Length: 328
Image (cartoon, rainbow, N blue to C red; front, side, top):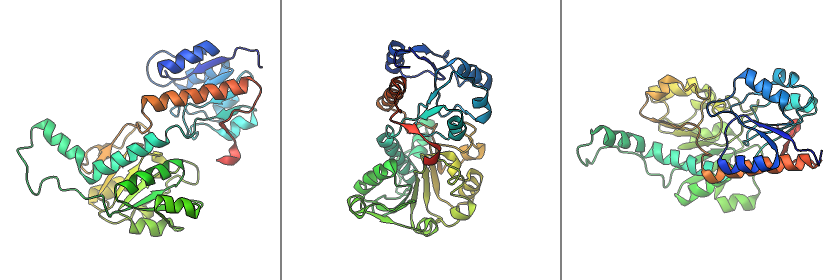
């Protein structure tokens, strides 16, 4: 394979510098401008590609993989999460899967802090009042939010992004707590000023803000179910920049409407673009369109990682960001 010019099919348009470099290196097949490929178009792309470059919006299940034919050998996912791909089924068919980890760490952590500030300081409500002309001057009791300094932040998932959130939170004077499958090294805990909770339930009941930073896996689906959400304080805030499936969105919506949870900042949603319409109506909720990693720098770096994974594979080696079923 080292001397073969691979056929690379991309499912969504990528930043110009990424597409230009891919075009120099591979036989590049780009889609027309527009939304994601439908299932038939995705199946056709998989049938003609040596390498498929999908995004998190492309669901590649066992049935699609079974009909892919013999040509497809690498799925180089443009994104860190691979819950859109049946990695086990791909592995069984001899198809390698890679991703782009670590690129969006700082950008997503920035967005988590932006949502924390937006919800606790009621920034969208103030913005709406200015745009509609409803603001008529300063008032001692208008738009009263909460001070961040001294509040307890509970970070669910203390990987790369969780630790980046912790560093930012510490600078804002937040008291950092975390729940993770494995406790961090004591030196790292000291550097982050973070307190570990073995019990997620106990942490949820004691913190003022929850930041979700775990990946979506079978074990994290609805990790924050109705029972756990009810453990949170009535004046607590929840922020999710990870995956929408981790939270029971219907339960969260009910509790936000009844005041059992004070507010939420959601960059991701359980049904992707199918945002719960009841959430849109709530003034104590900030909704964003999955833009946590949306920086020019980050998206170009993601493309560069995809290219490295493809070139390494083409040279007959294991891609540096290869994903194995055993690691999920």
